[in-house]
Image (cartoon, rainbow, N blue to C red; front, side, top):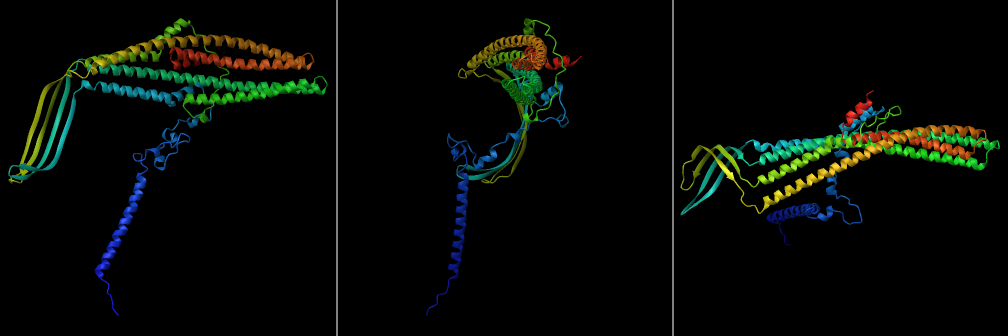
Amino acid sequence: MHFHSKDPHMQQSRRTAARIARHALYLCLCGLIGCGQYADRPEVNPRAWAPPTVEREWSPPPAARKLVGSAAEVAALSDLPASDRNRRLGLGDLIAFALAKNPSTSRAWQSAQAAAAAAGQAHAPYYPVLSFHSINGYQRLVDLVPNHWGILKTWQSSNLLSLDYDLIDFGRRDAQAASAMDRLIAANLLFNRQVQEVVFNVERGYYRLDAAQASVMAAEAALKLAITDRTSADRRKQTGLATQPEVLLARQREAQAQYDLENARLDVSLAQADLALALGVRADRAPEIEPLRAQPLPPSLGGDVERLIDDALRERPDLAAKVSALRARQADVALARASLYPTVGFSSFYGAQAFTYRLSNPRTLTYTALAPEYAFGIDLRWQLFTGFSRINSIKEAEAERDAAHEDLKDAKLEVAANVWRAYFTYLTARRKYDYAEALLAASQSSYDSNFKSYGHGLATIVDLLSAERELAAARYAIIQSKAEVLVSAAAVTFATGSSALEANAAAASP
């Protein structure tokens, strides 16, 4: 019998090999997992980040879900103050809220702020440029010289304070500053126009919502009349004074009145959404408004259409903004022409150079030095040829200037047309309101007379229902015509560019 003893060195080697194998397997698994995650990156597999087909909506992959933003989280919408949610708001309160919270006014205001900062930036070339530059560090270099080599070790610190200023630029700074200032004025004027637009949109939404709510009340009154007529027809049929067709006509009119009432309620919901949009709040947060039943009609325009057009051409902020934009384009032409000339500048610097120096072969002592450095001078910079770039930039600036001039003329024609349309819309609305008042009075008298005659058997059900229908139409007409007068008066103010805030204050004052 033979006994084989186990070699401890062999066992140790096997254990080491097994340990290495386990670590290698672990590293392979980690590598596979890493490759799997890396395979989803857009630079490796861009198709995974795009819609797979034209037939299905895109669903973001897991790696992209955190990149998909939510508008509800990023841009929170404004809401009415808690004190205003349970009370009816007048036109002045609504305008004040819209001017403070509507995103369009905030956007125009931010654009004006950006233009102001750009104008300040454009004036920077009038000032010198002061800068500081510091380099500090250590380097170890191999010094190769004939027959031997050595190591060069150096500590170095270089600190420079420089001052540069353009003395002569042949109008570059002036043109750049003028262009920026004109663009700033244009942005401010466009902000003013945006304020006017927000005020007009709130006024229009307010008047239309009030008219829609009044139409609901008129529809409810028409439904009550229809029910009264149908009840009268039923009673007359029971006594043998009316026929079944007459009762059916009355029921038909009642159903039509219910249908009109639902349409009127829908108009209220739509008008609430329009007003909420003008205010800058969600449609489901639209406020309740004060009714306008007692508000008088606005005063007459007090002038002919030619005078109003002249006022608009003189006062419209958006037209004045286009004038400023034209001036900015003219300054751009001057800037492009100035690029043909040289610039003369002053440059200077002052600093200190500190270093340590030591060479290993041949071995030297460590040298340390600290010395000042300074310079100043006049420099002339002139681009003599740039591949016709400057000539073409001048042509481009001149073409954009001419286009801005034509854009201004087109805007003036559009303003004149807007004032013309608003003026005659207002005059027509005033006349329609006068006719609507007469129509309502006549329709009410006709219905009262036909109702009494029908009760005495002197009028037919057709006569009564026709009078009822005409009365309902007259009530709708007076409501809509008053809203048209108010909206068209606001449209004239908006078209002429007058201050809507001042107009509202004047209308509200006794």
